[in-house]
Length: 111
Image (tube, rainbow, N blue to C red; front, top):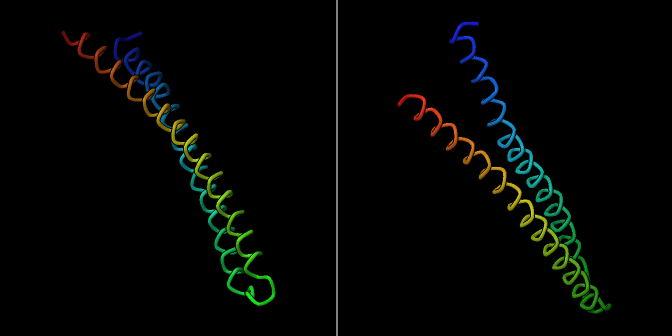
């Protein structure tokens, strides 16, 4: 096997080791966007229905109840996004650590 072939094989392996954490981060970001879109669509629909409530027929109590429910729903979304953010940060830090390791190995090989 020629040295160039082993170098190409090494690059293929290193490419896979870098690609996996970046793909995980991209997947987490995409899932977060779906969560946000789903929840905000539901919240907007609920807010639109609040405008049709009549204060004269007990609508005020129903509106307060609905707003309380929406607040809880948005707090749940916030918790989900915080968990997702930490997963994204973890995947990105793994990719950065791997790139730093590769740069150090390349510098050592060049020296």
